[in-house]
Length: 312
Image (cartoon, rainbow, N blue to C red; front, side, top):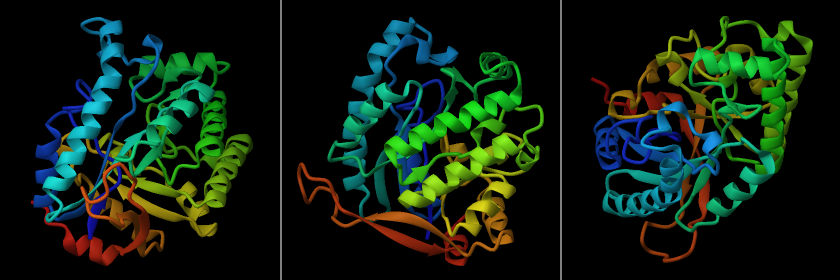
């Protein structure tokens, strides 16, 4: 039973992704997906939180469009969830941000109350208020804001991640070690820095404490990294704790759906992982107006996941 718990569309993430939401759903069906988690980015609240690509036509125009776009996304997703219910199990969610903790924590809580929302992903894309996954220039700016060393940036990232984990307790923790992406040495051994590694272990313990899942996110592979998220030493520590993985392509369009999935499954199997976890709605779409569906946790054997994929 193939699935992803993390995906985006160009329709509701313009400039950052491509393709309509419905076309992505249809493509996922063609590849053998049986569950598809839709997780467009949540609205942000300040012009300073926008990425450079979002500053046109004007920063304020972009900002003003985000909340109406989120509402349109939920309405569209709910209609498609019902339309394709006989072909694919669609979960509706969003990807959270943690730029200013108290402000964004409250907003995520409000957005998650919507009856159409099944779950959200707890992610960080900013550290010290600066994007850390956009380009090298902004990454260097983030380093300078954290004392001028990459170690300082890593420490700040994992401290802010702990704030997010403690406040939100997300079922799905997005790309746990995204901070590695723009590093000059993304494969560096984190255990070599006692302070950084201590914060990694501390955060993993927090996720285990509230029953969250780490996503095995294959997007790092398509961006040239040797391993996806999380890297091997983190995954091994998580496994020692008895932690569970979910699985995601973090696709931003049709061309990225299921990208590097076989490599990701091979990676988990090399770690001794034999199953991944997803969520299942307890009610059929459209049957309980105005009320959230309950959710069940579902284990999927990696062998079954692989067998259900229909890759070109």
